[in-house]
Amino acid sequence: MLYDSAEAWRNADRKRIMLFGMSGLGKTHISALLRETGDWFHYSVDYRIGTRYMGEHIADNFKREAMKVPLLRELLMTDSVYIASNITFDNLSPLSTYLGKPGDPAKGGLPWDEYCHRQTQHRAAEVAAMLDSGHFAARAEDLYGYSNFVCDSSGSVCEVVDPWDDADPVMTALSKVVLPVWIEGNDAHTAELVRRFDRAPKPMCYNEAFLADAWEAYCAETGLAEEDIDPDAFVRWTYARALAHRQPRYAEMARRWGVTLAADDVARVTIEADMIELVAGALEARG
Image 1 (cartoon, rainbow, N blue to C red):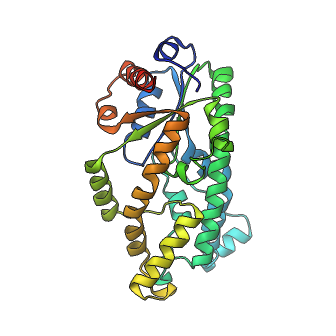
Image 2 (tube, helix red, strand yellow):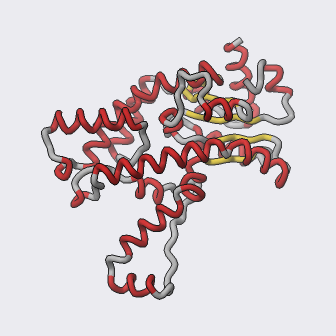
Image 3 (tube, rainbow, N blue to C red):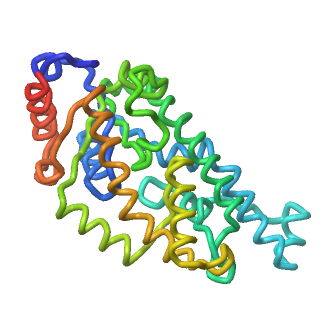
């Protein structure tokens, strides 16, 4: 690990961490808090995915829809308008919209094959964005003088690595430049995340095996044909299973390469020093 003790972490001139865990448990909140001190560079993996690696796919999808409208088609064909996404750290909707949900096209669903194709694109983009962490940590220090670095990872990072492989290329590379920090939720957090997702179901990225099993099981359980499946109903059904699927993956990532923080403790962090001490305590507990 990058820091082999609490003392090494506290005394480090360069504090570099990667926050991971389910969306909604505080990764971006802590990243923003650290950024606002003026001493930390905040690297958002989702933002990098949506701009550098998926930006062209997203823009092309917008243009594909615009080409169906005669007026916009004419303007596009004559380069009279410019269409692009406006992704920010706080608004990743263009990326989510592109990723989409499978099912009934009348309800905004994608054909299963196209949905799987976009999932594959996202997984490749996420791996590339994660591996960019070292470059951005060095770049942040060289260009802007930031010696401290926080990688705000996607909730799906556990889907693009093999947590049980000591030689996993992504985690091996990351552990050399950042300390992976899992923000672990409890049963109450899980219940709240499910309630929140039920109110506003959104696209997510999964590994191929989990997704294929979920789709097969849902089709068998409902007896519906692909084109009749309600996209929101499917992603709601899948989400609770995804939480259970991801938990042991996160835990193994933390066990092999990093440390674990309780989400309740993270929620009480109000200043940089709180976070530094939380990580120090986790390193002490790891021994």
